[in-house]
Length: 142
Image (cartoon, rainbow, N blue to C red; front, top):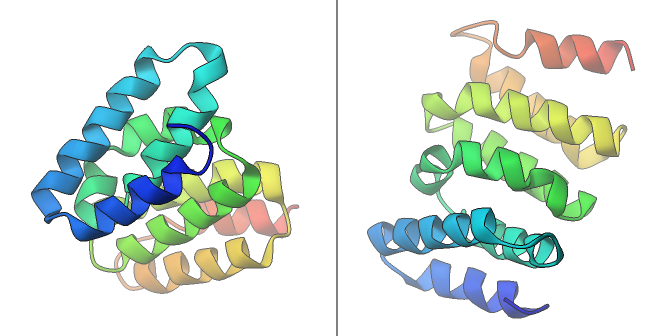
């Protein structure tokens, strides 16, 4: 995907049925893994534009974690926000939301959107588990 095409890919993902979005995202994850270093950033941006629902996010957690460093910090923050939002309805994304938040916090410390994402995670997990504790501790010590 050339610069700007990830927007079109994201728009396409919004229009497709959920099962087709997953296939599209899996295709881009595969392309990311096969990409040369000079192609990796653009392909990673395309991959992240297809992660539009909790099912896709859950199925591609590991791929997204590997590709996260290759997208700009503002896109990393936006992805961390989305994963935190998905975790509200998909408990399986609670731990990945903390992992994503922690990785992005290291690059964008102090970002207000990340603080809001952590608040969502804490509210989501507060009644069920202590999974958010490491991220809260990281915030307190930074």
